[in-house]
Length: 147
Image 1 (tube, rainbow, N blue to C red):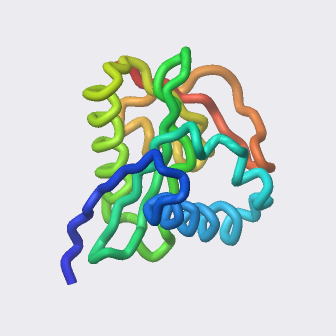
Image 2 (cartoon, rainbow, N blue to C red):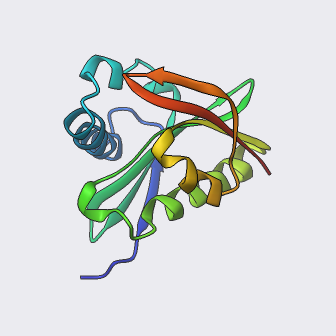
Image 3 (cartoon, one colour):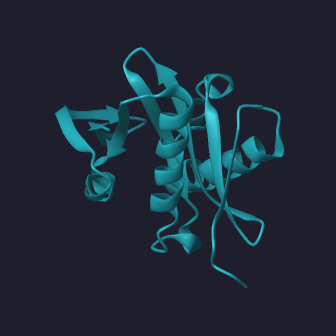
């Protein structure tokens, strides 16, 4: 078994890749964190580019990005529990930002980070802005990164 990550992306909401992204999101956000299914599926998946990282064809990490008037909005970053602490989320987000910068020439990336994830995002160059707010019953803070 190799531990290398293969990263793929798709905008096709009915693709296997997006189904894999949904599987990861349900395992992490719904099953682990108790986010209601109707909040997890907010109706904007069809507007996003979905990224999934695979280890030996197993989907292990995901994120989605939507281009808005404010920049590239990164959401739904999740890694299956047994695959955490291997650098997969870092690798996926670096690839996502590189892809978006190349395809859309976006200079600003932003996301709403759970408070426990802020130190991770800071290592990628994100900075917190504003105050703590609740989303799906979990404390978050907005973060921004400028290329």
